[in-house]
Image (cartoon, rainbow, N blue to C red; front, side, top):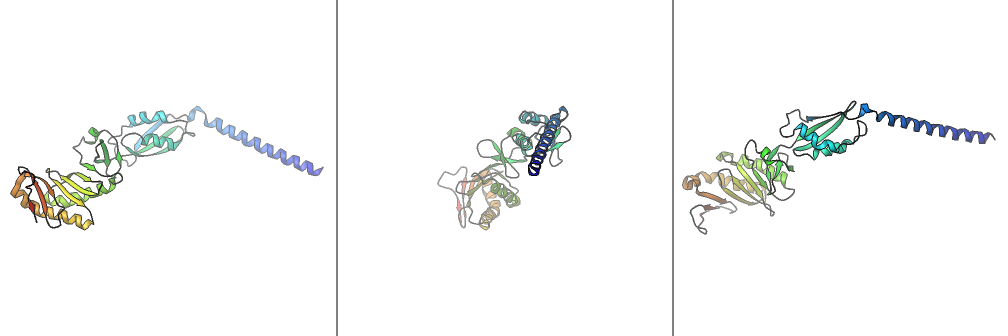
Length: 255
């Protein structure tokens, strides 16, 4: 008999605990659904405290807000983040709640470095390829052009910085860089000369080819002035020129 009473008491205690838990959960649910927790504002700010150059706060909110569901407690922050990161010019977004009814979105913009490929896409200074309005990207001047196999973006961007340093003694700069599918490098300089540098066996070889061009170019420029169209540096100890006004097959070759 006493054993039955203990069992009944245990069952009663369990049922009471379950009832209390359900009551507590219902209270929490009721509280979280109160109108005071309905999202009233979304603040968009720059992640690095710099003024946003291309992301318009009103535009970006308008594009993402329709994809945001729930209130202060129930809004899925990952879904909100992805909604903002789908907007052009947004590289990365972080989202946090601000009591009692606000979301704060910190936005990192893409900083365009140049165009990538033939489809009007852009590449950022961090090597991210993205799609945005080209006219906005070039509001301060034409951007350099880059091309290469998929996945080679960061390699091409890193080489762009090296080429700028290597051609600086001539006061020339690369305006386009191409890495072929066979991983051969070609560069077009801002004076119009196309430079073939070939495949890179090692970095010393690539630098040596550029140095040979840098050393010989003043003589070539003095002799041929603005007639040089392209220079092929793939020869071990020389180069081949294509010069305007000279028929094909008569290119100058210097050893």
